[in-house]
Image (cartoon, rainbow, N blue to C red; front, side, top):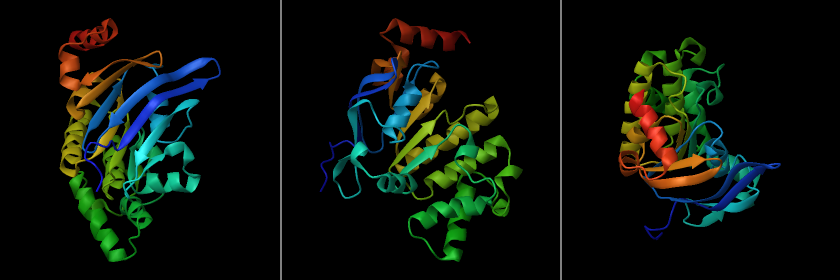
Length: 260
């Protein structure tokens, strides 16, 4: 039995350089099951580079990322084969992109998009797949009568909800989110955040959320990491960090939100 204190995802001295330019440097973190970590900072702070490294889409210049597999064995992500990484992303991991078109097949129906993920984990019965897809459309507040409609027929907010249904239908243990409400109208953002928060809580997901929006971080995350110039400059419980930031840069980020 896996010790409860063993992290699901961990990084040690994680560094990536783009030539002489720093993407991120010396990042350490541990993420446990059921925990949501927000990575915040301005554009160019290194948060997107870190997300790419943690999700094995990019190899580090130095340092390591390890993940505890479903069999309880912790593996170095760099040591995994491309096939193993793809299998993780289709099954035990999920990724919610800022632009839903990056996470959906636009020429496949809503039900087909969700069903594709189920087939990746071994579902084969058409009726069962369709029923599960229909159930998940309802869970993300898309009318089940639209199961045969295509994403091109959906609004931006509906596409994002469809992407979430596709991502979560297999109940992955770890979900990566890249600006999940970016580019949406404020009213649509609020509704989507409420939906995401409820699903993450209900499913007990671990998640890494990259965002420049501190309101998103407060609503979704339990812990927060502030990045600047590729380095983590502050890290702690989200509410505590936002209510009493120590670093001047974090204080500036928080005050800019309060003044907005």
